[in-house]
Image 1 (cartoon, rainbow, N blue to C red):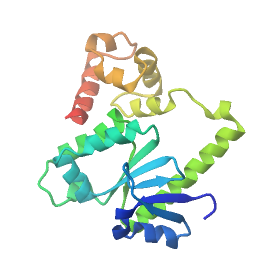
Image 2 (tube, one colour):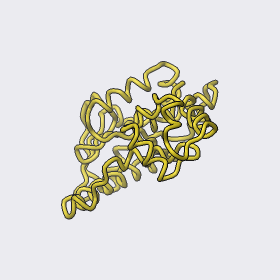
Image 3 (tube, rainbow, N blue to C red):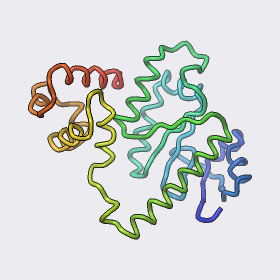
Image 4 (spheres, rainbow, N blue to C red):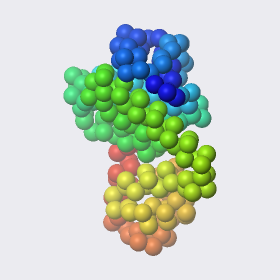
Length: 212
């Protein structure tokens, strides 16, 4: 497959996902990786977890340390959950699973995507690689038009209850980052037009679930 190269951790060979990628025409190299399970086109880190792996890593306290290593790599990162983490077979409160996914997405700013099975995982890895190729091409053709400062942060903030594009932009302008929004006091947030006490408390309750 032209322009597509994926490095897979050698331990992923047992999952058959690398074989599925090869069958789909992707150049795959097996190596020992310290961070993530796949590196797509040399720059996108993908940590693949089955639904059971995800829940076990949460219970054992490994999940967020893995997120930290991926963020420190300075590369784009994604966590891919294969299967339904709410039906993992482990006795865990669904709210804990939901909170973990929220923390990864909002606090760590690592997208979480889901796949149905191993073939779906392979297809998603290929799609991610193609999107990065298209993005790089677009930036090379017209960098100024494709670059939007803070665009990703605004997108995440719009996911908060009652926060649309205007409020998301105002929050980012006032607090500079998602982390500062999370740490902001109610008094500081009341300074923003359009944010009342009720809406602020809904936002803080929503965020607190993700931080547990």
